Length: 122
Image (tube, rainbow, N blue to C red; front, side, top):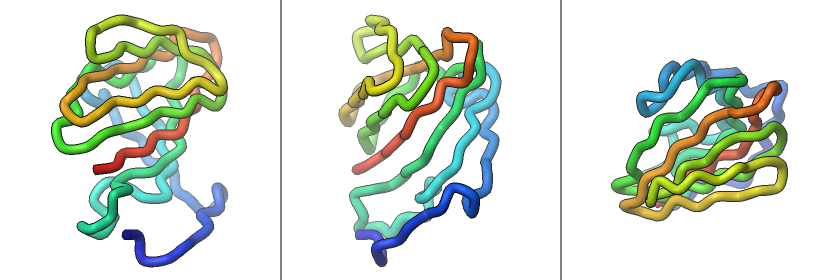
């Protein structure tokens, strides 16, 4: 697992800008406690971050072949596409789970940033 219990203070975490994630539009603005590739091999938790999409920006529809992901929405509104390509309105307090082998995508459909927690585990 992760080497130690640790507090990650928001002000100490640099922002990472990821462009056109999974073929989506615009930028995914990320503040990672655990960036991709930084977790020990034996850790179930692979990526943990607070993520933000500006209005109109999206994460493209993509498959999780080797891991699973959950989104927990903090603020804003969006449209989540599940494995069956069914679309759901999402907002504060909503959560999604994408299991291993499944697909998902997300678009900010609102007028303010869509802020959410993303956790990838294997």
